[in-house]
Image 1 (cartoon, rainbow, N blue to C red):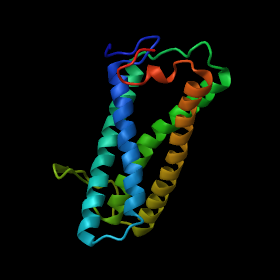
Image 2: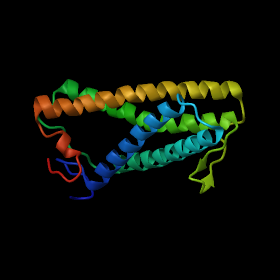
Image 3: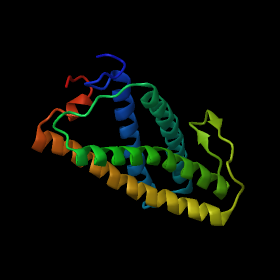
Image 4: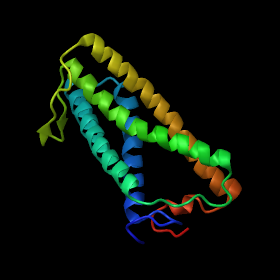
Amino acid sequence: MPLKNTADRYGAVAKTFHWVVALLIIGMLCAGLYMTRVEMSMTDKMQVFGLHKSVGILVLMLASLRLLWKLINTYPIPLPSHRQWEKSLAALVHSLLYVMMFLMPLTGWLGSSAKGFSVSVFHLFTLPDLVARDKGLADLLWTVHEYAAYSLIVLIGLHFAGAMKHVVIDRDGTLRRMLPFTRP
């Protein structure tokens, strides 16, 4: 499998970015829902939140690299069977997914800063606080973070539904272009 994308398929780098970031984001959404709903000791809560923040920053870094790769690389042309509305909807959903890949970790980092909790990344280094401590701002940022998470769940659902449409109804090989270890 080539590293770079071609006109008819995604390369190893794009596929790796896609699946690693997708798994991390799905894990983060599950962890976020869990940690905000389950009673835990303060020690456990700090560990879970710390891991959540670390993985969030990892997602931010990978999303930045992924976007850079997307900008400097070609990408497969849509298949002839794709209708204009499908191409438009796919472009919109993909764009919004990219927005969320940045919005979620940034609002988490900003919210932590405003709450007075610095973001340590896997206990290797601590990021600078982006804003001063401010309870009102922290509450606003956590609200944005929460609603963005629900929006991201909807977008992932739309993305998955589109992929399944191409597999079950169209049977056109669209999903095979992004699956690891496959050819279109």
